[in-house]
Length: 116
Image (cartoon, rainbow, N blue to C red; front, side):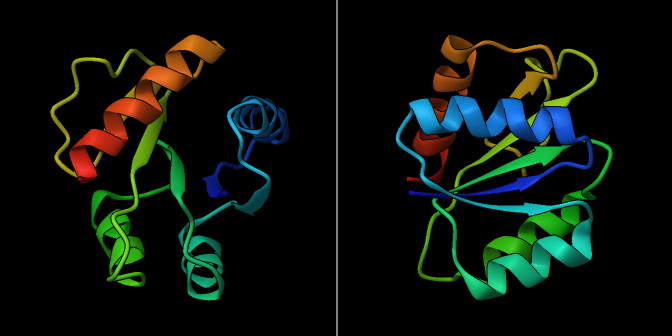
């Protein structure tokens, strides 16, 4: 499975990749900004998008998903504060930047349900 990680902090990228590998993801595209994310998704449609809350505007997630119109791509939004109660309609699931494997798994399951 392939994931697009939109994150500019190298340590966060490594943590997210490590946790996603344990969940069966084996291909990763990493983008540090919206332009890189759009270029990456035009090359390969991911099975999951993880999004840094500071890097991507809400409309960008719609544009990313529009690049793969035949796919229902779930998105997990990482924030610097607790986003569990966020009502952002473009985000399928939200996690604070301090997360563990169990919370990531729950967020991916929740995101998958919202896109189906």
